[in-house]
Image (tube, rainbow, N blue to C red; front, side):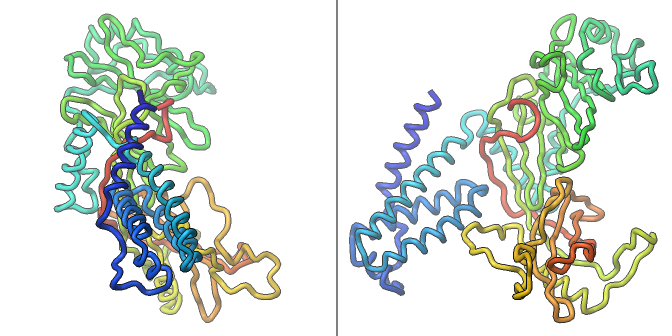
Amino acid sequence: MYLKGRYILSACALLFLQHATASAMDCTKAANAVENTICANNGLYELDAQLGEVYRELMNASAAVKPQLRGTQRLWLQSRNECVADIACLEQRYRERLKDLQAQWTEVLAHQPRGVDKQVLDELQNRVRASRKNDPEFALERTLASLALKGPETTFSAEPDADPSSEKTHFPKTVAKGVSADEWQALSATDFAADTALGATSFTLLDLDGDGQRDLIVQTYTGGTGLFTFVEVFRRDGDRFIRRTPASDGESIGGALYSISERGANQSVNWISLGDRVYAAYREGGYGIDEVYLLNPFQVNHEVPKLTVRYRYRLSIPRTQPDAEHETTYQLTQALHRALAQGLATVDADSSDSGQARKPLCPIPAAATDSEEYYGYGAGYYAIEPVADFAVTIAGECFIARMNAWFGAYSAKDGLYAQVTVRKPGEAEQERGYEINGRRYLTDISTAMGRPTSGEEQ
């Protein structure tokens, strides 16, 4: 059925291409031999119109494909222009490009929300847009907070193991405050051994399906390099709580609804009510972007409704910088501050462009032993997000700088949490770091069906 739907979409996309006639180049402005050849040939002119239309539709349909699409289009134009006045060559280039764009168009359509998913995403998108008018910094956060699931909520923790050296925890033996006798009886009849054996665990009672009985959210910290916490849901079913999915080999994390990483990611969850449904709004942040996946708490989630919010930043570098080693501050010189500010001005959240030729950031001297050091800052660290590499000229010398962020981490007080590090090519030990200030504003909102990168087999 799904494959059949894809074939139907492909046919629709082809029909769309056949009727595209209003997007060809303006022949009154033809500036070279290639454009003059296209304008003089009806077949080529029609192909150009079709290509222009589907390219624009793709750009409008999915914000996620824009950077790559711009890059591949620029490369294709270079390839097309090599044909000069060769009509057969031009026709082949156009038909190859149309085939590629048609495949992308079909893929984009296949992941567009429909039915209830579309209704839910449209409502969420409209609410964020309305909030943006008054608060372009925190429109998403305010919207999710306004949709917070209502109802009494009780949270209690598992008990530590009798062995002080053990990290295991166990379900409490005595009734937790705020838990009714009926709920405690159902909890006592449920086996939580697999969910409390991995580390610190908390239990939250909250009605997730509107049936008047509170369901259970189990949150287990497992640590590891990512400082992971895994979350699973149990539905209240009569005299016990039933796990959303069977545990895998006794491990609670095998079927977790989602996981949160406290290192190497910027993730959070809001339990929200939208329409007549409840979702775990699972947010994954990055520099310039927030993606919110609407997870159904009682289903195995494959592709789910996804809202994408994009931001731009007003970046600046403070003259007063912290000196962590001496727990004090110091002042940047005027020349250094100006140089860093000029380099920082080149950073753009949308600057990624696969069509641009790779160029060194600093001139490569004849005596250089490793030319790669002049193209970029080098390998990064998984716990921080490299945003951009750029050149900084200080006292006539070229340095390479990298702006790092913590996956878009942002607060009302401090704004963007980011820094820039600077070094000369080949002199990594001379690296210096400086804090950056950044205030964001929301620029774009889009919807699609997507698959979260963390949590269960979505």
